[in-house]
Length: 268
Ligand SMILES: Nc1ncnc2c1ncn2[C@@H]1O[C@H](COP(=O)(O)OP(=O)(O)OP(=O)(O)O)[C@@H](O)[C@H]1O
Ligand SMILES: [Mg+2]
View 1 (tube, rainbow, N blue to C red):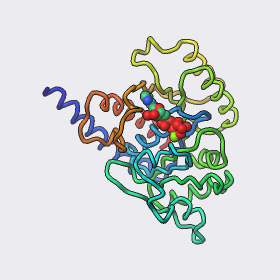
View 2: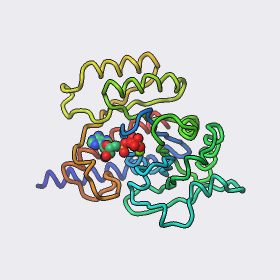
View 3: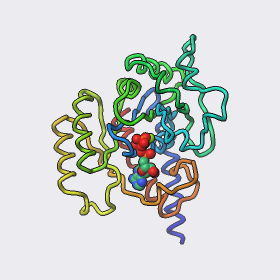
C-alpha cells in the first residue's frame, strides 16, 4: 500500500515537473501529430502530449471523432467557433483558447473546417502566427490521411509525431507517407504494441525499422502499449492529468511521460 502510494505520487510529480520544464523549453514550438491512416492513435497522443508538455491543443480534425469532442467540447452548444473565427479574422488575431479542468487548453475543432481549410502554405503561416501570438507551444491534431490543413500543419511543425500500428496495411500507408513527408523532422511512434517486447511482430518491426532507416527518420524509444480499457473510458479528460492513478492509468501515463521526454528532446 505504502509503495503504491509512493508510485502514484512520483508519477503525478513527474507530470508536474515535465509541464513546468516544457513551458519554458518548448515555448514557440509546434508539434504536429498526423498519420496516413485513421485510428492509429493521433488524438490519444495529441491530447496526452498537449497536457504533459503544457501546450495548446489545436484540433484540425472535422470528423465526429475529433479530439476536442472526445474531451467534451460540443461545438453546437457555442455560438462562436474559435477555429473558424480565427481563419476569417481580418486582424489576424489568434483563436480564442478554451480552458477546462484536467484538459489541455485547446482550440476546438469544427465540422465546417473541412471546406474552409486553407492551402498548406497559408495554414502553416497561420499556425506559426497564432503560436507566436499565444506565446506558448502547440500540439496540433489532424484529420487522418493527407489534406491541405494536415500538410500545412506538418510544414509549420518543429516535430511531426506519427503513431504507427505494426500491421501490413498500416505500414504500406506509412511507406507512401514517408516519401511525401521527405525532409520533415519526424518521430514514428509504434502504438498498440504488446506489453512484452518479445511478442512484437517480428516482420512488421523489422519493416518499420528498415523504412525509418531508408527515409532517415527516427523511431521513438517509447513503444506505446496496447491498453485494452482505453476505448471504453467514459471520462472525457486527459488520462495523465488524473490526480490519482490506478494500475491502468499509471501504465498509460508512464508511456506518455517517456514519449513526452523524447518529444522535448527532438522538438526543442
Ligand atoms: N495504445 C492504445 N491502446 C488501446 N487503445 C488505444 C491505444 N491508442 C489508441 N487507442 C484507442 O484507439 C481508438 C483510436 O484512437 P485515436 O482516436 O487516438 O486514433 P486517431 O488516429 O486519432 O483516429 P482518427 O484517425 O479517427 O482521428 C480510440 O478508441 C483510442 O482510445
Ligand atoms: Mg483523431
